[in-house]
Image 1 (tube, rainbow, N blue to C red):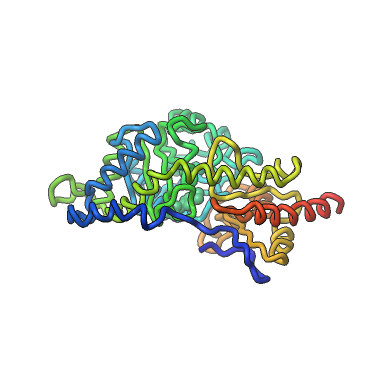
Image 2 (cartoon, rainbow, N blue to C red):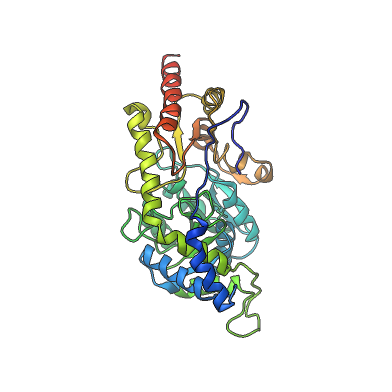
Length: 377
Ligand SMILES: *Cc1c(COP(=O)(O)O)cnc(C)c1O
């Protein structure tokens, strides 16, 4: 569970995940009983990989399943063969897992600021910085799953000749084959964590149109074994088990209903709020999200306290940015004025797929009241 701003008694939490029910999973579990195949790319993982590939409009060989997205990002960086000790340019404005994944790949996070409208770095600035010889890679984050033009990053990778990895952890739906953000040429990683829009508990997926690259990632998830028992490279163990694949397959069976639920909660907020507040919401009609952050004109902490006093939870999903956290305080960083501003003003509201109209209206009432105060102060 993520720690939010909690002081008063909270009876409306900021998140309450709801994954596919046990009843829906059981038929798949029975297949595991019958096959007695529990891990190591069993039939359910094969099927899950194929169905995910179809969902994103890719070949099955372009998909590599991993234990979670944090490990997926590390393995994606490893698969690109970047020399240890080099810097990885990345936004500070992301979940701390991004920086942890870079560090685990033996690279040094080197933080850059983001643009206020896209919450992504400025490509021209990155191009300048990426020319430094001690820069080995670039990590771009798709902010909370919102569609961004990923072709910009494909072009940057080609220009600077260094790998760009896309942390698209929250973009499961945004990347769908007929969605608003096609899978780019750059290696891309999606999370299947319980808090994400399509959750299986713990799980991650690395996507690469370069099937050899995807195969290198798969090799790294299974000790470097390539059919035999000789390690071809020093890989670890990051395989998904058949049990997780069972949850994933059952979840995909009902994905269209799950997606409709998420979009419905977004629509309820849309209906409950006046235009100026609506404009601050980080969501859109063409992509399903499991989090709803808003960019508040005042201080997020003031709004959080007002919500808490009414028993409503909220969360600063990305805190003040990675550079503000103890583990990364010593990391190299460009000036980060926008990140600092976002850290002070962005707040995650209660958002769940089965949220009632009453609960949405309860949150909205506080927003409307606080908006009036903030905008007359
Ligand atoms: C959720 C998230 C991750 C981590 O994904 P896991 O599957 O939990 O490891 C990484 N980056 C971002 C931006 C995320 O939102």
